[in-house]
Structures are given as C-alpha cells and as structure tokens.
Figure 1: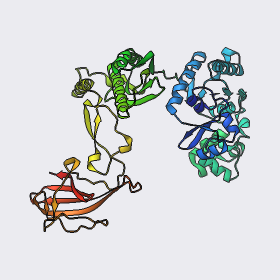
Figure 2 (figure 1 turned 180 degrees about the vertical axis):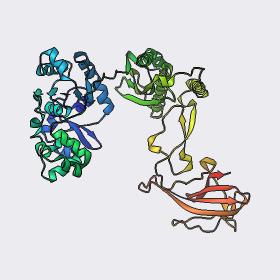
Figure 3 (figure 1 turned 180 degrees about the horizontal axis):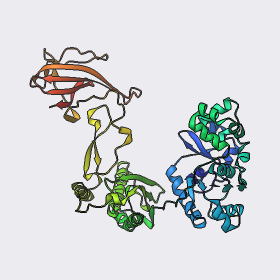
Figure 4 (figure 1 turned 60 degrees about the vertical axis):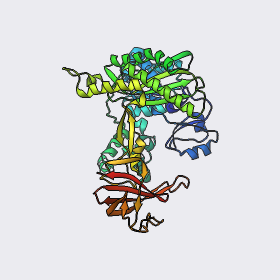
Length: 500
C-alpha cells in the first residue's frame, strides 16, 4: 500500500504543504490538515471554529473531490509505468500486488523504496509504504511507516493487536466498543465471533475479522483513467469572442478525439476561462445527447458572451482571455449514441435541427419549458436553454409551503395582471391582516360571481423585513363558469391564473 499523506491539502494547494498551517474543510468539518496544523492542535473531524481556535493563523480551503481526483491521475500514470496493475482506493491511497514488484526490484522493501523515490522525484515527497498480507493491515502499516513498514507473512494479528479500535473507521461501532471497555484490536479480536454477530451484526463480524488480521478483500488491479481535459494557453490575451472560439477549435477536436479513442462520448463538460486579471469563469454545460467538437466551440462562445453581458451590467471593462480549459465531467459509452441501422430516429433528427437553430441564434435562442419549485405560479415556470440542467435549488419535488396544490390553472399570467373584483354595493372588498374579508365578492371582470373560496395565506421571507411578502389567495367562479385564481396583495386585486 502506498500512502500520500494529507492528499486533500496537496490537491487544494497544487503542491506539497509547507510550514503554513492549512486545513481542508467540508460541511464545516476538518477532513484533512497539514503537519504544521496538527502541531498546533488541529485534528481531522474537528469543527471549523474549534480548529481556528487551536490555530489562529490556520488557512481554510474548501474540499474539492474533483480536483483531488484530477491531481491524482498523474500519480497513477507514473506508478503504472513502474509497476503494472495498480488499484487506486481513493485519492492519496494506492494498492498493488507486492510479489511481482519484489521480484523485479530485489525485495519488498526495495520495491517500496523505489516507488517512494520515484514519487519524490515528481514533486510528491513524504510518501509512505506498507507491505502486509491484506489491504487493511497494509494501510495501517503505511500509516506507521518511516517510510517503509513490512509486516511479515502471518504476522498481521500481532501487528494490529496494540492499535486502537478507532482505526476500524466505524464511529458507531467503535464508540460502543469503547464504552464496553474494548479499546484495542487485540481486545476486539479476542471476543467470540458469535457474540459479536449477535450484538453488532454482520458489519461487526467484518470488523472483527479485520482486527484479527483476516482481510479477505481481493485486490483487483485497474488502469488509471486517462486525463480527458484539454487546454490552450494564448501568447497574448484575446478580447473578442469569435477570436477565442476560432482558436479553441483544435482543442475541442482533441477532446472529442481523446474520447473517441476510448469509445466514449461526453454528455457534460466544464469550461474554465482564465482572463489576464487572474479571474476564472467556470460553468458546467449539459447536452441532451452528446457533445461534438462544434458544440464545445459554441459553449465557449456563449460563455464568453455571458461574461461580456455581466461586465456591461457592472460597467466593468472586459478582460482578455489567456487560457481555455475543457474538462469532460460526465461520459458515456459511444455505443449508446450511435445512429440506428436504418437511419436516425425522429428524436435524433429533432436534436440536430434544434442544435443548429441554437448555434445560429445563441444559447438562449432555443428554450424548453420546465416546471420547477415555487410558491407562486409565475415562478414555477422556467424556460431553460436547450440542453441545460434544471437548477437543483428549485426542485419541484421539494416541499413548498404555501404553494397551490393541483389542479393548477391552465392559463398563468406572467406577471399577474390587475383584476376588477367588486362587492354587491360596487366597492372593492378588502382583506385585513388576519385574513378576514370585508364583504363577499359579487362581480369579477364585469361578470357576476357564482361561487368563491378562500382566503389561503401566502407568506414569503417573513424573516427579512425588506423582502417579505404577504398575500391572500382566492378562487372565484363567475356566471359563465370561468374560474379565476386571484390574489389580494399590497391593497389591490391581481389575477394570477385562470382555469378553462
């Protein structure tokens, strides 16, 4: 087992951590920290505030799993050249079979030391290696190595015996074991397996086997995933969108060619644009089927046009583009996207036609209607550009207190239009703060009212005095059997929708 300590910190910094205390945080919890941070009392699992209390000068970096994986790919390629059949368990931790490497390099310890030296030559110093009968024991040996620790064949149980049960990485079970007085792996391994199964289930039996040095997980070597991203760096900044789009054509071709060699296609891509001020504009683009090179060029141009619009709104002078990076973030087997034996189906022909129109008119030239979450009918309608993903924060399946239950009006007014609602004496009815109606509605839009129901209160952002909104909903049916959905808001009546 090869272990690169503090890999999330290395990936976030882009280099091995120096003397500066650094911590990587996810959900306000420290998931990794540098050696200098640990020297000041920072530990994995600490809350962010406690870590900053221990180390006032602590540098906080957000966790980025994609960055960790992307930075780890060169390490895998390097090791694959030296020892075939590596298996990445996670970024920073690699397993490989020791027998072949030991024969080639003259021993297990010599082989491990050679791999550590190779990593150090490629800007990855401080790696450690552990050799043992199983993956779990080898990982614990790597964590205790300096820099290589070899556990003799059949010696896993004795090696693991003094280690604390916390190394099993199961907080629920290890907490229970500690309360029962079982604090080391030797104590845990000494328990009868039947008692462990009765109290802790099959998961407990699995951990019991690990504590006894019986790790039955097979090692399945696999080749590292190729680096699919491509980038282009310009000698001088380019200010025009068409200039950049023309320059990235070969880069887009390289992305699709690299995927074609692997019999894959891209269905989601991230485009990073770096300007000469050091700013980076990143955006993830989706495609209804799969991206071609021309589609990638169109996305670069549309992203540049969006940047130009943002600069115009803020009256900021647009910066020139120095670098464009195209990274496929989701791929699929190309066999799923091949045309049929007897030509393309209607959906594929529609896609090509719509994509062609979108390329001519721009990103928002072709939109598709979608139903999203919201409390008001107008905000539940979303016209999404062709191929884009629906925003997760507006999920229609999420609860929206105060939203209108089905059936919904077939006609929605965007924005709501003023409505003429009158009582029997010709005055407009009002609704007080408690939702009480001053008089029943008798006329709506010059038509007598047949029946009505309500009010249903609609309150939004009550915690924000500047943005809070309060309205009362009513349903009114007129004499011609037309049903209206109306709102009383800000001292006036508004028609939100109409049933037909």
